[in-house]
Image (cartoon, rainbow, N blue to C red; front, top):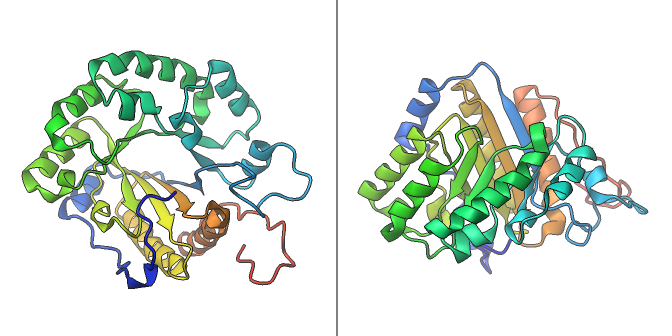
Length: 298
């Protein structure tokens, strides 16, 4: 992911901000006795994740899904796959695996949530539901130029989204978070409709690190900078996730991106190890196909 990329990440203050004042209130109000942690990458493509797959791997998804428990499915942003494809993905992955698919760009970037986008929404959902019990939270990522002047479109979209399907939303225009009256109205919309407010942690857009949860599920899109600070940033996230778990959060979906995606499995494995230790979890640590390579962090 190139979003928020900077040339000199060493100049960025990567300190994780304190939680928004209302985050604790939201978690206390929606406290859960159960906790689910999903960690994964954005892609399973061998070309992007060079060095992750053992030599001779023929089915990338089949291997990937036995290393991680989830995938942020970005491929669905570029086109609507037929129901049969979603069914194939379902059938070749383990029973505890979850897909978190991005809504197709026809909805978010081309039609920009206008009423004529509904046909694409219906088509997309009718295909994606073939993931069945493996369908995690679907997410909507709007273009950076989608601004609060089109708030009514967002309201209409969210209020008409099927309530039985979990949804998360990522807004990138800075005015959604810089104007208190707008962001408060946005948070209220999300809370009333049980929408997850996506937190994006990337070097060049620290304004999107709002730390405001709107339900008992955190959806985090973490973008490393291919820099040594990537690991200390993850250490800070382990601390924050531990706090949220104590406050009763039900689910955390944490997806690791990189400017060069080949390092995403390394960061993901590092995070899994840390959380297994800190929270006494039993998440699988991905196998290292290159155990003899110096500097491997799996």
